[in-house]
Amino acid sequence: MTNAAEVLERHRPDGAPPALPLPRRKPRPRNVITIGIVAVLLGFVAFVGYWAATGGRWYVVQTPSMGTAAPVGTLLWVEPVQMKDLHVGDFITFRPAGSDSTYSHRVYTINADSTISTKGQITAPDPWTLRESDIVGKVQMRWWGMGWLVKAVPILVIGGLVLWLVIRRFSTQRWRLPLTVAGGALLICVSIVMLRPLTRADQISSVATGDGGRATYISTGLLPLRLQAVHGEGIDLRNGQLGSVLSTHADSEGHYPVTLKPDITWWWWLVLVAVCFVPALWTVFFGQPSRSAPKHRAVPTTA
Image (cartoon, rainbow, N blue to C red):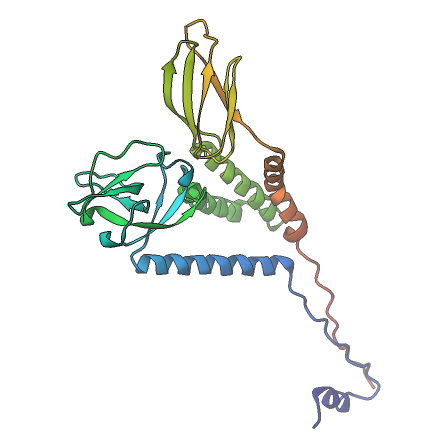
């Protein structure tokens, strides 16, 4: 059987230089990463569609009543469930009769009248009892911190669309990538400033004692916090963790002040620095247009 190379050689004019093979184009790293990101996004969209089609829902934790079990900003994946399948300790989502709010607490007791009572991890038992019609579903998955990303989606999508339109309209091809990287970083900063997901805390109580005042706080941010009494004791808190300190030094107004500040360990610093360098590294390794190798073309010759 005659292959293609023999056919070309047979029909090559006498004296013409041999045809040079075209270089095989290698896939660009940027294209490979883009394909991977698109594949992950499509897979996630398919999963969300399947979850919704089977009756599943998702909720973002807004209050710290579940402590470390589901801190503020946790994304809850809730699946429909029948009351007869629930047990004490199950983590459920429900809407009490006469209430417009949705809660996610654990089953505290199963009562003799076929109702159930619920309770948060750090709160007293809830004042209501639930029936079958009040149950939204059972929590099947808890994604720590991902609720903040869900809340940031409107900012990122609308801001990203405006950024894309402005760059396409007013910038040249050379400046599009740097402006996109800088604009994306700016959108992330705006989201952090507006939502404040990193350092947050809620005061649970402040009680006067014989020695001063005892303040109790719960951390509701992603970064660990240091609760410190002025000239007194301190305690480290992570997301969803409850803690109290005794302050014995009153200020000029008779208050016992405490301070809250990030307690960032060395590995947290590494993570934050690495995240800050992501745009620069992306531009250096994947953002620069690659120079394609010159294509070899057969030059016709005259006999």
